[in-house]
Image (cartoon, rainbow, N blue to C red; front, side, top):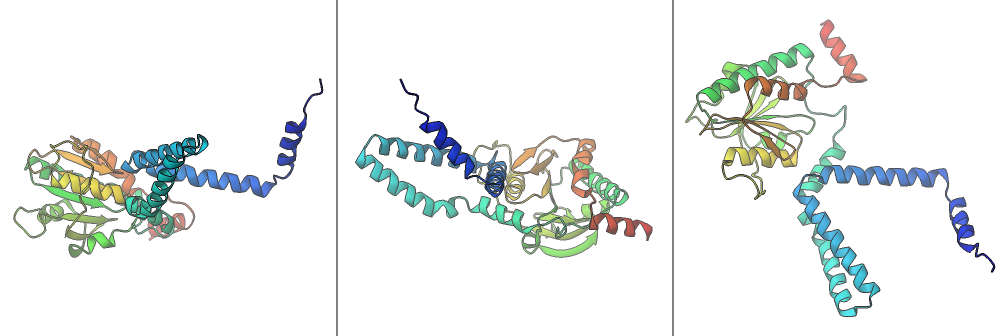
Length: 279
């Protein structure tokens, strides 16, 4: 019985048409898809993506089985769904564009050397510890790579050097700045009394109040680190990437804050840091 060699020949023909640029193209697309998955991971959007994939799979199965009516309805649904995607994924699309627009040399965070970073973190920790002891509610937003000018614009511009005493004065109860968030950029407090977007995550504990939900809401939209002091319990919490860590000790808070101020120095940044140290 003759052996059919058509499939191996066809496979070899397909491989012969693939060049180095095709391989590079595939790797770039794979890297982009991986970054998209990394951005959507542990967010509400990942469940929507799974739903869309299930809907596409059902559409293909119905089409294969010649279920014309169901296939037609599903195809129309998928078409409408793709029109609605920019609205459904608005926060994720905004974050993706902000990631694309930011750059290593265009980051808005001020450069701090190790000594400056330790000093700023020490002052913030000292203030947060005292605020927690007196059960004074507070929201501290620490800007990282993504600029927060739109957030600071909702409050009162200050632009003052960070110190524990300064932060304590900002959060004095029954003052205009107490009920909003304060934005920190490098070693300066750039604005206070700022408004933050509330999270729409309905799975959060009912123990979390408005401050905690505002902190989580902002962390879902940018890479900022948000410190929260509860007005009811004095509990210290930190929100980042849509998640919140609660019941932190001042010592552990200091460890969490250090990476937000210690900027890895490479290339031009390294030259700038060395120049600043020489001065």
